[in-house]
Length: 150
Image 1 (tube, rainbow, N blue to C red):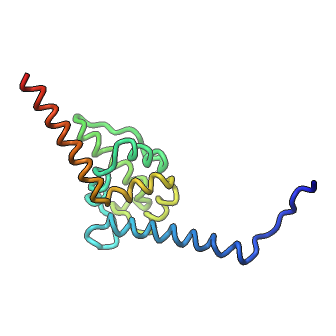
Image 2 (tube, helix red, strand yellow):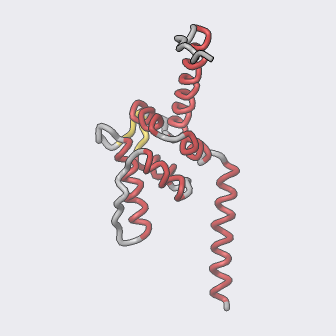
Image 3 (cartoon, rainbow, N blue to C red):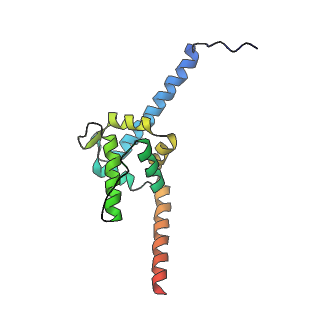
């Protein structure tokens, strides 16, 4: 059988792909507005760290890899290391280095992320997930206290 000839996309096939791109950009913009808590049109370090703190460690590591963020995060404590790591991820998105992420920079970063990474960011705004994580932390805390009593 003859190999199928290359057919340029007809107008009909072409429209859905534009629609898909537009839908994706609307999703990115919705994420941007969710992270930009004070609605000033920028994601500052505080807003970014607050979002990072709600991500699971493996999700954040995956996002950092996609954004080619610096993996070296020195710090005397685990908390200092985490904050340095958040800084590195922030810096990989803050393309002009002015200390805040504007919508354009955020859209560019989103374009570099995998769909599952974007979904994990979106899920940090899902109240049901917080409850679950909060219970998990409480459970760990109770377990720790229980060990102390012995």
